[in-house]
Image 1 (cartoon, rainbow, N blue to C red):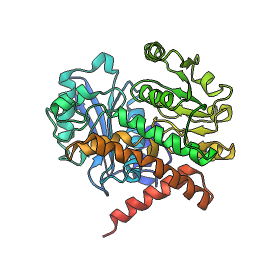
Image 2 (cartoon, rainbow, N blue to C red):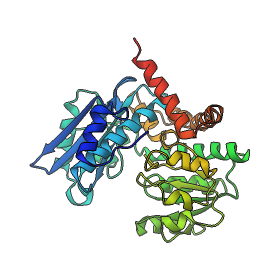
Image 3 (spheres, rainbow, N blue to C red):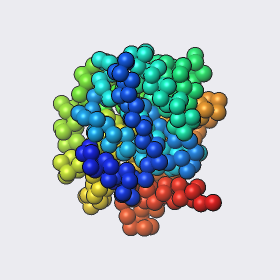
Length: 363
């Protein structure tokens, strides 16, 4: 998947005139009374209503917010297709610092905008939004998932997101080393917030040595206080250069794999929860050329969307966990397809997802 940048011309070109665009609908939302500025992007409804979270983030510009919404929505189409869900891809972003401007009135206004789409887009949590926020949005919009159990929802979707990433990591180990166990392996986790902290738990339970990095020292502190054996890198740049690192797990924002980080990586596997990890086209080949096995992000981090999709039909955690466990097999199948076609795993995953979406569009 090719990302769009934040320039106005590039946004419009991607949306209307490039193969990477093809988005069905982009909605700009504004409510001056509450300070709400949001973008809702629907990439595809070929497989069903678009499903994807709401990101609340202080973007540098409105153009950058639109670009991110377009990229994320397209990624959700591929993610939902690879997860076997009857949902297309969509995503929303709210512009601003959630710690400064988030309010009940703003979330209610946002809920009204989502509701106005009549079910074409189903929203959930993402960076900057939480279960409590979705409970508020749901008061104005019935097409809201990721709500609290007290309000008929599934609760925190990061639990199964981390579980799915762990399954993808096990599959990667199986493919590369012939054994899915991570015992004795050194895993670097960049970002130990919503998903990363749960991933750390799985890794420790499996016997891995864990090294973490996060810009938020309180997040690092919570992990170390609970698990003194966890090591801490000064920052992500130091983390990716850790001697003896076997696996690198980007679990913060996108673009973690770029022209600077890929040559510096000491890990043999990259498998993490962050969306849109490849900063630009060609990075997947750079990883492949270096002999680094890349587990496509939208495949391994699909546990959360599996959970929120199930919420629409009466949530059952065990049923969702069983589906998320299949990420292990899906990841292995992608590696096998990549080897068969002589292409990087990211390209193989794209082909499989695109085929499912294309089949759904046929009369």
